[in-house]
Image (cartoon, rainbow, N blue to C red; front, side, top):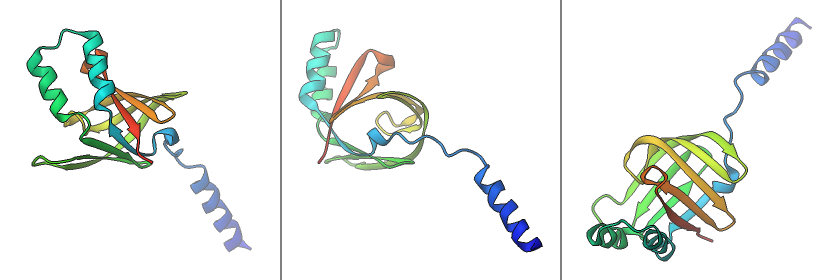
Length: 139
């Protein structure tokens, strides 16, 4: 009987432990950079030099982001460094808006990423929220 009671207490203490971090289920899966939508955004905002627009145009559409519950993996077609993977955690979520913390695989540095998911479209806020890089869900 004591053994059953001890096991019940152990199970209760495990169940009452630290809460599981939130999972952004709308984000899970693979997303491909949407070159046309992102360049259209850049053209509307303006203020980008022709060189910056050209460099962005060469890189957009080549990246995929794959989100699991705890990791994001970025793959870029071509180039020397083609795959980066890193853990992340959901810092906050409100409806279809998420704030993630971890290594930013797009910028290549630690930090936070703000993004919005709307059905098969997602966008990341870039340059401190100045413009958005768009993605489409890969079926």
